[in-house]
Image (tube, rainbow, N blue to C red):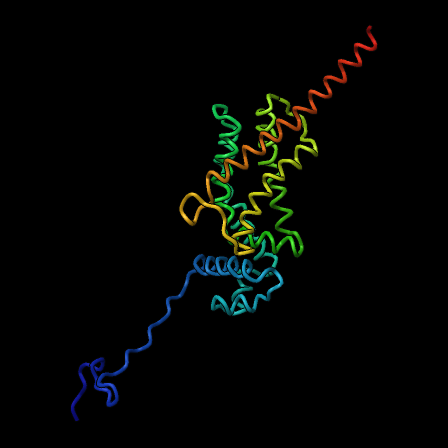
Length: 250
């Protein structure tokens, strides 16, 4: 009986050649597997919210429930890691450097910051995960707004006052913060229109970017409103003080 010296070329009565042996799937290392789970969880939570089951997450990325829990022993541990990746991980220290630059005007600073923030941070995953968190336990929204209150809002209020010709470092008033939240929340609403409602957004650049002129228009409108509202209040208070002084000292 003849000996087959090249079994890979053995004839198959049906196809003429022997079928290729199945390829072995490459075994992922620990870091690679953790990254696979994390990236899968980001997309999964952005699509389904935090009420979705981790068994469904495991099926969607091709890992067993047991393996998923080996890397992230609780669902909260996985959510915490998603927060660090999507929110704190995308925080750019150059934003703070820009807002602290003494050579730039407040208008340049706020426009430069929001132009980058809205295009580099407010993507689909960021927007949808933040909304889903607000609709559930607020764990991610509370942590993110704490970050904003510590590292962003005081700088924006300082530059707004500088636009009005003030150098005060006093604690932000409720009126100042509410006006600022109208600006900041307005930019987030632009992201919501795109990633939640599926609506188009005015754009004068590439389709994947938000419009620079849109950002500048909103910043300028905010600064002018601040100057008008708080400038009138300051003048009114000064006038009342002056009038009172004249009455007491005729």
